Each structure stands twice: as structure tokens, then as C-alpha cells.
Length: 240
Image 1 (cartoon, rainbow, N blue to C red):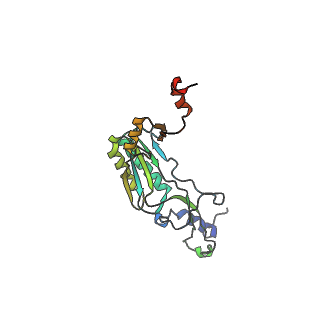
Image 2 (cartoon, rainbow, N blue to C red):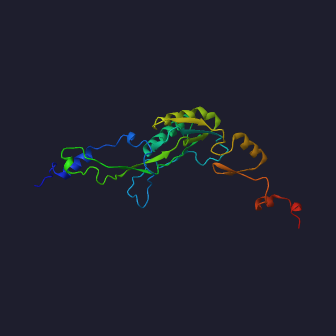
Image 3 (cartoon, rainbow, N blue to C red):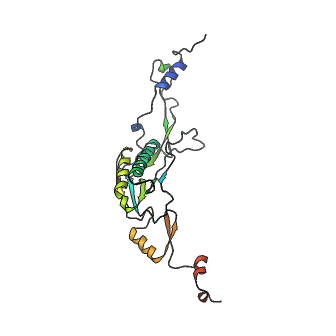
């Protein structure tokens, strides 16, 4: 009967592949290369570990969750899709357990578009006969990361004001899944909108806000009347 010889070049390669684990992330933490996204030139990219970017009650309207807090990066670095998924799970699990699954909306604000490469080198007996060193050193695709800047928001959570301690604690726990430094910031705005709280409440009292999912549109005080506004006016104001 024929048997496979493990001292052959194929056997050496097979043993090396079986023994090889993942590289430590210190190899990929810093932004050294140009952005390298998935494209028709860059095929065969593994799927990112994170597939869900919103957790909790993402469809609750804007006026239910007035409080918002953010995790902000203090370093220019790269965050792996595995770390983003671990942070999402940690934050979501704490909020569900301590505030309730209907008490918050978590959003991951960065996406892992950048593709990592690895030039696998054999480190076993007889490897020098099989590999060519730096010849053809452009590596194979290995994983995906998000490139983040200083001051960029990584995670955001909106909730009711009574759940402020739970939101900050869940974001604090999620920080431990990332390399580098992050800051937690309490937003002055209403939820995920761009309006400060005082401005939001004033416009709401004037009736100038139109709900738009988790955001709002501000009606201009001047300008042509749209069909909906015209339909609300009495006929005496419209004339002939």
C-alpha cells in the first residue's frame, strides 16, 4: 500500500500550515500602508468577523432616547474586525443584562474596509529548500481592519437619561477589547442628532421638527409652503 512521505516538500508544507496560528495584532496595529479595500483587483478576501453594526432598539424614534454617549479613539491605528465584534458583544451583553433589551440602541461607527496581507514563511526543517525569501513577497489576504483617526467615534449608545451609568459602564468594558487608548464622552446633543438638547427642545416647542427615523429634520421658518402645509390652511386664507 502507498503511504504519504512527511519528509517530502508537500509534507513539510502541510505540517507547517497545521502548526501555524494567527499573528499577534502588534504586527498590524499601526497604519503603515495605503488603504487596500476589497475590489475586483483584490479578490478572495475573508469575511469580516463583525456582521451586525446596530444592536438593541435601533428602530425606536428619536424622542424616546435623549441621552447619548460615545467612545472616541485617541490614537491613529487599526482595529481588527475581531476586536470590533468582541466590543459589540461586551457592550450589548452588559446593557441587556443591566438596563434591558428595549432600553438602548448601540451603533458601531467604524467599518473594517482595509484588507491585511501576510507573506507566510515556513519555519521548519528543510524550509530553505522550499521558499525563496523576499522574491514575490506581496502577501495573501489575511483579514480586515478599520483604519481610525484621532478623535474618531468608534461606538455610540443612545438611551434614556436614567440609564446613563449603565451606558458608561458598558462602553468602559468594551474599551478593553481594543488596543491603544480611548475616551468616553457624554454627548450634549439629543440622541444621535446634531442638535444640542436646548435647541432640540426649543424647536420642538415651536413645532419645527419632523421625525426622520433616529434623526430629525428642521423646518425652515421662511420659504414656499409645501402641499401639506397648504392643505392645513383655512380656505379663507387661500383666496380665489
